[in-house]
Length: 256
Length: 76
Image 1 (tube, rainbow over the protein chains, first blue to last red):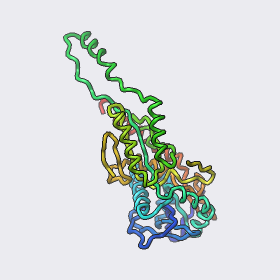
Image 2: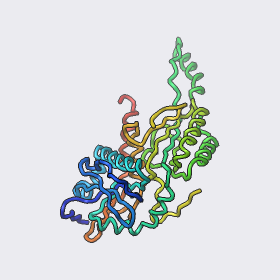
Image 3: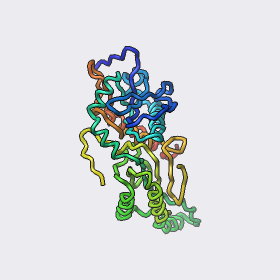
């Protein structure tokens, strides 16, 4: 698969798609930390792009992504652009690493998905994504028991052990928690799999929540946090652009 | 929003709000609009270039697990 770079050595890196184009385009810098953000009108929607090096973002993208330092910097830049636009209007964020060689090819591919994208705009209207994680709290280290002999020490230590065991997450607790969250969210989706291996992580989900229900979400989380205060810690991140609630070309959309 | 209230840790969507790289990667690599399948297409006449992100995700996960395991190993 021999890649031929574009004649000007640049490709179009796509951040996301909006229905409206606001007055002044925000002064944002793209993933290469150099090129400004532009809006390209395609099929009645606006595609937010920056023109980046074809060498870095097309030919060597795969190898660059295996460099965690490059990936960290560039993914943060990608998120910052989308996040800034999402503060101005609803945006369908694009997955990291989507590039096109020309505006014509970008518009051609958007045209194929435009009906689905329009449905997605309805789906995410006035809503943000929130990430919720529950961690099991590790018990604090206990003081060393004092004992004269090794046998006494082991006995004293053994006596302490049952109290150190963290209470395991009860499935019923999680079901109640999920139900309470579902009562606030328009939709829920499985969380990403990169952070799945975090230590102590017991449960995670992504929620699509109308902005008018943000306080309600906070109060549900705080209620469970109070109940679980010594056993579990709840972490909530957001508001995110709705990464997890954009349909795939062959998805069947299910919502409340 | 970046605050702790009654044991809920709330974090904004920007790294300066305390967002972790894991959360960002979870979102930007895993989700979002996909205009075409997970393949690298860079043949003449086909303009879209997109990556097989499953491979990349696996390598990121492996690297992060390795980092965590190293950090947790006794004596490190």
